[in-house]
Every structure is written in structure tokens, then in C-alpha cells.
Image 1: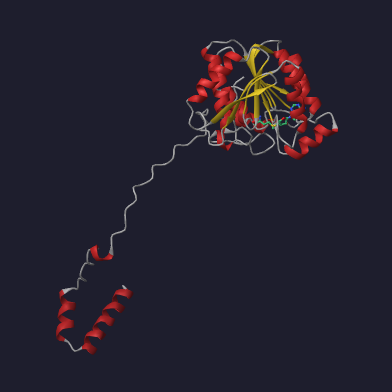
Image 2 (image 1 turned 45 degrees about the vertical axis):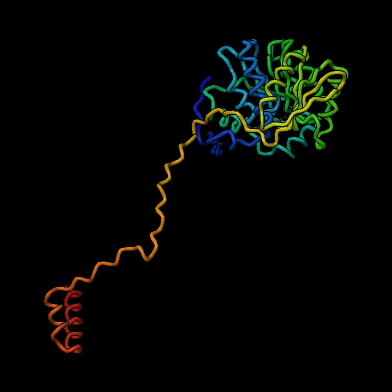
Length: 316
Ligand SMILES: C[S@@+](CC[C@H](N)C(=O)[O-])C[C@H]1O[C@@H](n2cnc3c(N)ncnc32)[C@H](O)[C@@H]1O
């Protein structure tokens, strides 16, 4: 489906028209942009088949970014409650507290500012995803929906079923103190659910249910060449885990907005000329008659003459 973004929807609501990805509200930071770019580009270079999935899109910041890696024939599925009611009190409270102004129309307007076609959107609970996406069909999934333990545990189990054997999952908020349920679900999947972590940033854990060694070793080679990101390796749950610190990470190129405007050329600034170098003002030019009157008549007569001339000019 191809839609043209409009500034307002039929209800008159002002819809966003971001001129760059930085203008889209969200929580998708440069270090993770670098890693999404690396994982998705690697899959494209290896021509790994598979679709993309995102659970929790909000205004579309990470979805817009992921949409830039779609190849012909790939499907991108995005699931979010948007403005639909959640089904349990805790999830409703989470929605009211964190995402009160979220609407599907805003997401779509943002997304269509950067891409010609919307992804396949599932508006509703993430538990719907498993029945709408084919098993083992995805190569990359971003899980960034509810922060509640039961929901996240379900999202991780579903993602395991939807990823193909070498697929990569990026799990948001795996260690934040404001959402301990996410940490419990993520590390539970590592401890007992067969999830192999590959690397962590301050915000996301990247893992696979396949063999993590080949992708991890290539990632280490890539990180060795990055001066803008620190990395180290730690032994966790019997395997090597790459830690990435990217507070100064330089983000990769973003998809370009159709509302992007070229900066107008700034006119070359002209330095002020010092007073001493400024040309002298042009001498006052007086008519010959006036010059004669000023030179030969006594001052009181010449002043009267000047006033009379000014009055006559004024009347004319
Ligand atoms: C942290 S935001 C996503 C941020 C986005 N990925 C980004 O990078 O900007 C979490 C999103 O999950 C959605 N969400 C919360 N609970 C959900 C649930 N049970 N099912 C589906 N989506 C849910 C919210 O509506 C919200 O848009």
C-alpha cells in the first residue's frame, strides 16, 4: 500500500512531518543504531533470507531505521497497541504513564515521511504476533514493547519461534531499574531459554538462538576498527559476551525524510569597515544661486532666504 503523508488527518489532528530521523520521538540511540546497521548490513551481505519484526514501535524511530534495510520481497511486521486499550491494568497504567499521546496516525505519518510504503502493522497486543507471522521466517527482531515480565517473557518465546536459526534478536531495556520485569525475562531466557547473548550496549542485549561464535568474532573485528566506541569481552553464563560502550558513537547514515529541506546558502559575512578606513561622506552640493546668496548676503538675510525657499518647496 502506498500512502501520501498529509499534514493533518480527517479529524483535523496535526500529524508530524519530521525533516530528519532525529526529529522523531523515541529511544533509539547512536550505539544501537551502529549495531542495528552492522547486524542488518551483514545479513544483507551474506544474503541471509528472512523478514524483519518489531514489537513496540511508538512513534516509529527504530522502525523507520529498520525499514532502510528491507530488500525486495522482505516483509516488515510492526506490532504496537498505539491508541488501542491494553487488556490488563498494569499494561494500561504503563500506556497512560509513558505513551499518552501515541496514535497510530502519528506513527504512520512519521514512517511515510521516510519510506514509500508502510510496514505490515499489527495494532494490538504483542501476543497477536505469533499467529500473524510465519514461524522461522524472520532474520532480525527488535523487542521493545511492554515492560512487564509476563508480556516480555511471552514476546521472547514468540520471537524464538519466529526467528530462523541464525536470526538475531535485540532486546531493549534488559537492565534498567525502571523495568526490572524486562531484566528478569531477558536473563531468564539466557539462563534457561537457550538464548545466547552476543553483545550488550547500555540499552539493548543482542542475542541468537543459533551459534553466537561466528557473528561475535566478526563483530569484534568490526569494533576493533571503531575509535568512537569502547568494547570489552566478559565471560557470562559459560560464553563470551561483548560489552559495547557507545556514549560517543557516531551514528550511521539515516533514511532521508521527504520533508528534508536543504539549508539555505548563508551569504558571506561582510566584516565591518573600521571608521578610519570608511570613505569620507560626499560634500553637500548647493545650487549656484544658493552658494551666491550664502557668500554675499548678510547672515540674517541669507537665513530668511533659506527659510523662504524651504517653505515654497513645502507648498509645492
Ligand atoms: C519503548 S516504546 C518503543 C520505542 C521505539 N521502539 C523506539 O525506538 O522509539 C514501547 C512501545 O510498546 C508499546 N506497547 C506497550 N505494551 C504493549 C503490548 N502489550 N503489546 C504491544 N505493544 C505494546 C507501546 O505502545 C509503546 O509504543
